[in-house]
Each structure stands twice: as C-alpha cells, then as structure tokens.
Image (tube, helix red, strand yellow):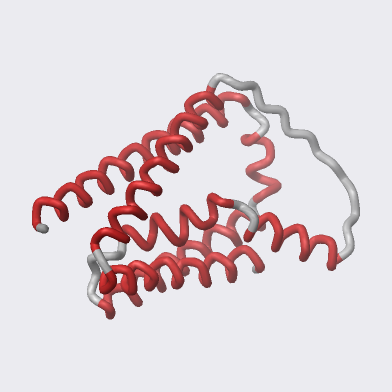
Length: 167
C-alpha cells in the first residue's frame, strides 16, 4: 500500500510537472529529455551487463517491527532514483503532449496499473519466488527491460527532434 500510494503521488507530480514546464520553455523540457535519455542509456547498459551475471536469491526469515518495515519501505521507495525516472520523468514525458483532461485520464490509468502491479506483486510473491530464483528468468526479465527502455529512448529522441524542427 505504501509503494502504491507513493507511486500514485509521483505519477501525478510527473504528469503535471511537464504541464508546468511546457508553459515555461522548450529549453527546460529539452534539458529534462537529455538527462532522461542519458539516464536510460546508462540503465540499459547496466541491464545488458547484468544479463551476464549470476543471480542468487536467498530466503531470509526475520521478523521485523511494523515501524521498521514502514521506514524501510519509505526509504526504499523515495531514496530509489528509479522511482523518479519511472513515475516523474518517463510518465511525465509520455503525457506532456496531452490536453489537461487527457493528463488526468492518463494519470488515473497509470495509477490504476500501479495499484494492480504492487498488489499483484505482494499477493503473488510466493508464486513468483520459484521462477525468480532461476538464472534464465532474470535473463528474460533483463532482455524485456532492455528492449522496452530502448524503444522508450528512441521515442523520446524522435519526439524531441520533432519538436526541435517545429521551433
């Protein structure tokens, strides 16, 4: 629930921060796009390197207090740079050309997907555990991430280049 609520908050911030930047200047948006592209290219490179690594997941059974779980979850959520790249920059970038009403629909849809994702992950984690331990599964996951992020980078570059031509 903490992760889903945090994601919803950051999704709405991302969708509407690009709306604000759109009124400020194309130069600000261009700078954000360049930073996002560089971040995603590094992320893609790291995932490519990770394909060659062996992953070992161990079950650790340790009881934690509610306060400890809460603080760790908040820290894991808000101190993770990927949460900002995914929710604020990527979703914000994808929705920047939408009309204001469409931005609300997009944000609600992305938020719904986030809720489904986090609760499915939580409730189905014991089912996923046996698959995620396999090295081959990690290769498929990383290959999917690399492919998806590469398509995203190409889309951002194309969109930015198209906007430059219109300027």
